Amino acid sequence: MIKVTNLRKQFKDLVVLNGIDLQVNRGEVVAVIGPSGSGKSTPLRCLNLLERPDEGIIEIGEATLNARSYTRKEAHLLRQQTAMVFQNYNLFKNKTALENVTESLIVTKKMKPADARKIGLALLEQVGLSHKADSYPITLSGGQQQRVSIARALAVDPHAILLDEPTSALDPELVSEVLQVIKSIAERQTTMIIVTHEMAFARDVADRVIFMAEGNIVEQGTPEEIFDKSQNPRTQKFLNQVVG
Image (cartoon, rainbow, N blue to C red; front, side, top):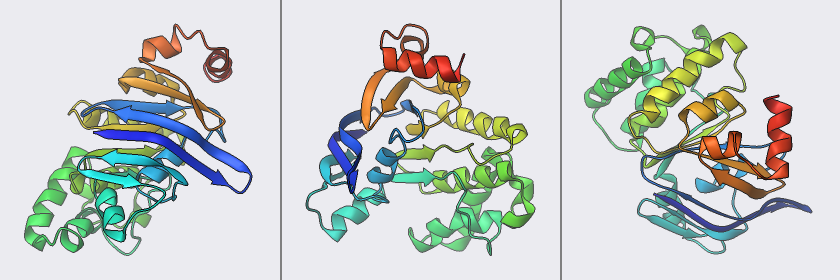
């Protein structure tokens, strides 16, 4: 489903991605963990060209892109393969929850508003917010806004959903409602890459965990291999600090 080869990204003298290779299979949930500043959000942003990688080959679904040289058409096709869920929701403030979900269906997929509305309502129900369809973001809690943004990501039926620390902007009491929705989506065999600092969630939901540090993939494996059986000193040190 997703294959990344030799992905590199540098900001001036700072190497953020040091030639990483990554593969994600259809229906797989991959959690990316690591210390702050380890570059763990950058691969996600490179997969849909929010950040332009300096080098590397990205293959998602039916799109292939060489970072060194690509056309606008290739970039457009790559962006269509995934949907992103951001830390800070990125909802349209002047649109209702339902309008936020249906916007891409109507504008990008040229769907009839009535058909888009039907899909939008079903997705809001899936994330437990059908009763908030006509509410504006300002009236919703952070957890509810993030659930709307997840419904919006699902609306375009992407090959994969990329979630960049989806709970980091939430008050602690709102985290579990969002994680529960993500877990329910994972159970539907949705391909996902989740950058997260929620270790218990990564252990519980992910099929595979990737530990990143200083722009490198240090170690990857099943949750059990990473959390319980890691032999890597870098991984062990990080987990001892965050898990205790």
